[in-house]
Image 1 (cartoon, helix red, strand yellow):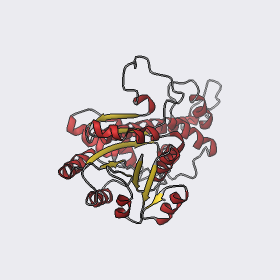
Image 2 (image 1 turned 90 degrees about the horizontal axis):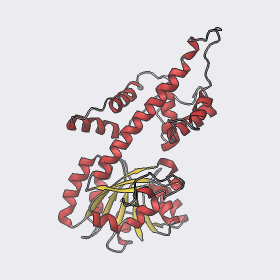
Image 3 (image 1 turned 60 degrees about the vertical axis):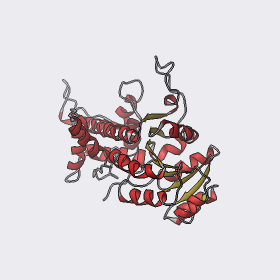
Image 4 (image 1 turned 180 degrees about the vertical axis):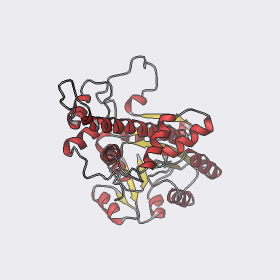
Length: 324
């Protein structure tokens, strides 16, 4: 099928590439003309502006927005809505607060436009690995977009099947899920990212504890001096704590055991804050997720080895470069 893509940054550009590899036609636009021209050379149809993008698509149109959360997404979505027709679909794939989805869907509904929110995980590796997708919106409209989601998702791969899943939605095992009505996709992605914060913080604190161990010694007086890269590597193989995040930590530690290229300033991308607020609103105890968020705030005052490892993992999966 065909789809418009607005926002060709770290993830948007690769989303277009993955869709084109699967045979879908992509009409692309970004304020960065170099990004548009690069994708045009790879087979995408370039658009001069939003009006040109909409005109290049046949109704019912689908346009995927991959922009930073906030004002730029709001402005672009409304500008597209002014140019689209009843039955057209706006897919919001950025990291947006689910309450904004609810408000925007209410604005678009009287025009006959459909808003689909897609929590998208995969970072800079999504082109090759595929994207884990959490989709919110009307089931019938989500079904119309299924070829797009199927192309972006990782597919079955070599992950063993979970026992007891017979008869359940097969899309889930291919890496995408219809999470519920409008807003549910971004709510699920918000919680996903809050869990990510907690996992990263646990790894970071654990390796900091290992690094501090030379003050200890065995019965013969020999100090504990751990090779962090070797421990990260052995934990990847048969332990109960492996993950892609540990893979990234192991790569960073093998390259530079002191993480001298990291300063330890750790940004938060918004979802951790939203999850903490949702926990308060729902009266759900989330001490680990909240503490991981607060640890990122503290990192901006002074920097520990743990925070350097957090920075290294963020750079590994998402290409995030912390401010110097």
